[in-house]
Amino acid sequence: MIESEMKQGQLLAVNLSTEQTEKIMDFYTQVIGWSYNAFKTEDISGYTMKSKSGQPATVISHLKGQHANMPPSVWIPYFQVDDLQKSLKTCEELSGKVLKKPESCCGSYAVIENPTGAICALYQK
View 1: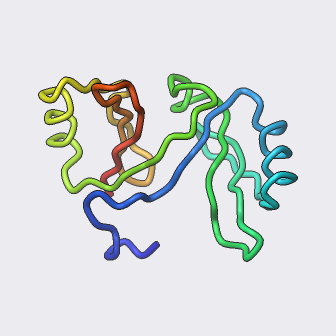
View 2: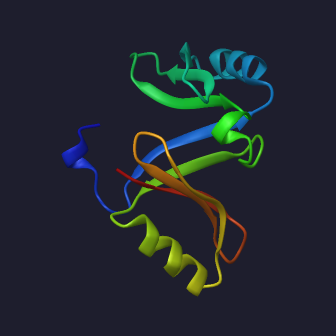
View 3: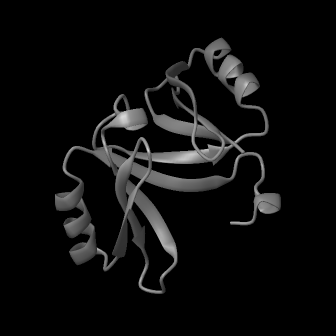
């Protein structure tokens, strides 16, 4: 995605953190037909899953490093926000919870829970 195209509220990605990355990667390869590339950064490792056309579909990562405190085996959508700190403050004012404080990874993100218990991540480039 071209950075200038990112807009407030836009769904950017849906990622999964799990202790069983290889098993889950094989599952989605067979069920959906995704292919994959392994990746490793200083703090995270996992797989970038790709559609049959070769377009990135999602990331499946290990519950280690900066993802160690992520909810396990839950798909987490990432939404673009213009001001992460303002969005987190508003979340708490509206009875939501910040489950994971902001961290840097190609920008900044945090994981929140809405008042009914649904989880998502907010991302600011």
